[in-house]
Amino acid sequence: MTAIANCTQRIAITGASGFIGQALCKALLERGDGVYALGRSPTGTAQALLGSLGRALPEHCVVADYQQLPALDPTAVINLAGENIAAGRWTARRKRDLLASRLDTSKRISEAIAQHWSAVDTVISASAIGYYGDAGETALAENAPQGRDFAADLCQRWEAAIPEFEGRRRLITRFGVVLGDGGALAKMRLPFSLGLGSQFGNGQHWQAYIHRDDAVAALLFLLDCEALSGTFNLVCPEPIRNRDFTRALARSLNRPAFFRLPRAAAKLVFGEMAEVLYASQRVLPKALLESGFRFHYPTVPQALQAALNNASRANSA
Image 1 (cartoon, rainbow, N blue to C red):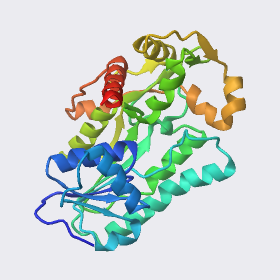
Image 2: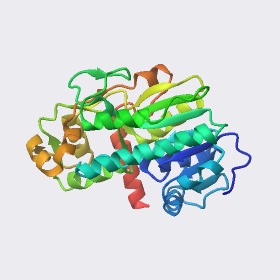
Image 3: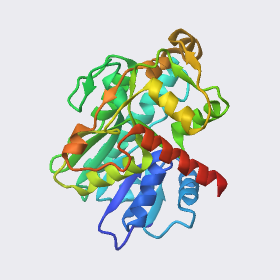
């Protein structure tokens, strides 16, 4: 294991090969921070980072698996690991896998902090706005109560898996749907490009999104602001109704979107996971805004258009 030298900040990142993790690693490396990129497969993680960086990994980036945690010496941890909750039907086995992918990594990180990583002063751990469940028209700041469905329980247990450590900052980041070149938008783009895009039900329920650039910028902001701790919603300041998001995406692609997907039909296709698609979550980034963070894409249409532009440039390169 190669230690990172000559870097004051050395950040251990779980889920480094993921949609957010790749962009975060790139941003940290470009500003000169040391990065321990953690994943189940070092080879896969390295390949993902090579693709996002477009060049060889620098000396201040070390790729490692979770068996190598005791040998690392990070000064901060950003825990992003967790399987995609919307990637398939929530069978009993799938639910166990979703939970294990979050709790197992969080447990390993917590043990490493307690037993080996004495230099760590900041722990940032991901969660999701699924914590709030289906809340109708209620505006949801960070102090809103937990929901009562599987996604809410999953998020609560995920957050609890990273305990408070005396003398160290702990920050929980509840992500909305992250828009960028890839991720959820890549899955939505094909049917909409074919004119098959549809809103969910009557489309009146609220959804919360954030551009990947803003999500990464928010993580860096929280990492650097030593006075901050607690829970932060990582979403655009202006949530959007599903109907309006559907129209905005279709308009950006110059395609119609005439269809509606009834909840009953979605339940047949997706099972219990369909509830995520119809949950109304009017989530606001109250704590982030009050801390002084400024969004580059404060509205969902702005974030959506920027993400589509990025994807178009990437496809034409």
